[in-house]
Length: 595
Image (cartoon, one colour):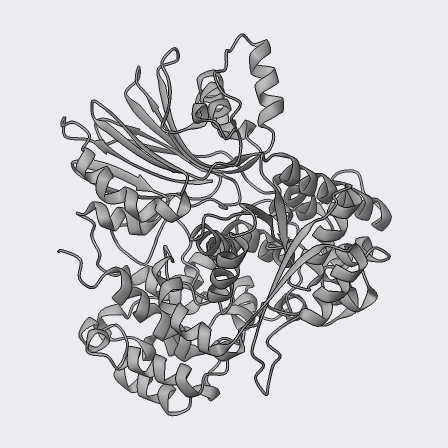
């Protein structure tokens, strides 16, 4: 796990050290253990390392293989690297390290642009081929690791976050009107390749790019997720056994492929609790677990300790429990926003930021339960969409997911940003992609391949890596996701959601954890906006910077401020918070930049 960056000159000039020097400081928190650069001809690369696999200096990056003429910068973890390494040695390749990074170099030499298809894990990497003078970039299938880029006539740059690209300079920072529609309609999800900034793009998950010196960019999608039933039908028990086996293997790989201890972020929900049970089943002793809670509000509890405590008691983990008062939350909000590569409205972003700060003092790697609700239909809106048979697929989806209808979007922004219903158009295209057996299969496939990438996967990556903490997500294991996508929807939607996981958990987790209502990483103060939190948001949306930016319609802002507790999205988010967060992100990352 690391931070990567680079610049490829397209104008015949040499790669610039000064650009890399400006970018690297924005990646320090992602890789606190080591920094280095490499430059030759038109390319300059930078790397910040978080040492997880092969802790020796032989695994430092940028990694140069003189024999093969390849140079790599890589962020992530490859869980099948040992198997690949053994196969490549049989093919005659020689290794100078024990790292998964070097395996990528050899895999690229052998399989070229097809090499990502052989990698099982989370990754974003750039490979420079000195012989063909071409740059190859690839991102993992689930988009767990980020990869942003910016291209102009004279350069192509990339980095693990937008902050590094902005620091490099010469980025078009105008707001992308299509992305703004997504941001305010799709729960702050801006599907790749767009971002909120016109001059910054992100690599689509499961996709690779090849960039040539003449500026030609070749994109290749190397992975598609099929959501159709298998030819041979399976019984419910056969599906349950298959999912159990795949999940057990996913947990095991994310435990064993590390040369440092691995803990678990234990929320008290079914998903993270199941990880603890499976790790105990795998024979892990003295497992480190971590929970966080916040102050209650009259409408909602601020912690799930009553459930996480039961799991801790059953498996006797070495537990760390943190209770954060509201007085500590608000001062840390700007810090969390500073580490957001894109604006994120999820209430748990600052929660993960505060939790990661504490966990990073104990371990460098944790397993986390993100992805289970999307893969196994755990959210309340999935059965509602399934039952509603009226209208087109995008209309059925929008009624239960979109933060606001298009008519309200037009009311919320100024004339400069009013346009077509871009989000409905995008979602309609995603739902209509082939190889999905039913409407709910279409929805879950889109969620897993597109929506989850920005909410919550990106949130977890940004907030944990802000403290040099690697988060591994077994529920987004490639093989588990592919298997689950083929499973009949009723085995997901049943039992109030995640039926098959509840069947697996029965007997190894307390019934109270399994049968509890679906919980959410609670941050009540950002949902029920009042007191100093309301004052904080009011100051942001009423600021001179916000007014001069001219994104939000003032009458709409005033309407929200007059009754913030009356305006919630369909997913129960505060509309005022959504606007305040976006403006705060603009102020944090854009204001003060040289034009």
